[in-house]
Image 1 (tube, helix red, strand yellow):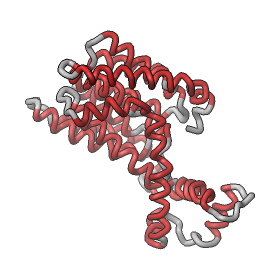
Image 2 (image 1 turned 180 degrees about the horizontal axis):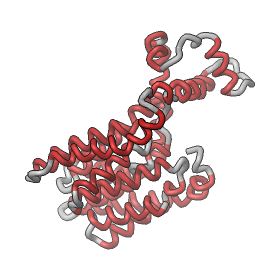
Image 3 (image 1 turned 60 degrees about the vertical axis):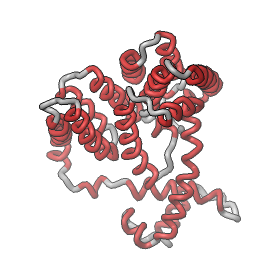
Length: 307
């Protein structure tokens, strides 16, 4: 929680100049209750991603910034690809900024990833199939999404139904690849259910602040564009794997929330200098979001493990 809120404060202070807007951003993040989310690896991933963006802005040494990015990549196994792609675009950004050592942004990130993974590879070996939990995660979500669409309700537990599927229709689907190739139609249907199930959680996560962010994107606020691109890359390469195996839950989105709020308000601060209505929209959306979050704050705290 300290890392989550502390990194948020640093990025907000760096990107936003007006004190009132800084307080608005901090209040939105603090009243979200996302700092209590469990498992806490999503909260730590959000802290590291926010610190990475802050380190880029204040020009911390490349070896420190790359370490933060590598740690973000190791917060969960599916984040590794995201950290590598982020490192590549960070390299391009540094090169465009005229940094003669830009390539080290990419090299150091890969080096940190290798060094931090080395002890695990030495102890457990490099046979990653032994640690593949994708099928187990997928089967549980498949049954969870499919059960409400059955015409005849069942009193059986999800675990019992999973065991029946494993012994019956899916007995040869020992991996995700086999399931997809053996049952492509079922998998496509599952992806549709997963997408529809996850859509409301975007609204529940970002709430009315989606409106100011839409203004920043469509009106093309220049100051935050590179950071928005990095945030979008992180979202795509961490949420798509989640969508392929499960549906996108609120806890999968909390890692983007601090940066999302900081960039939305910073972009509106820039646009508001020439467009008064942007300021009005920002304050209305921000205050509305705070009240929305306060209504559900206790529920978020009490049910943080199930969001």
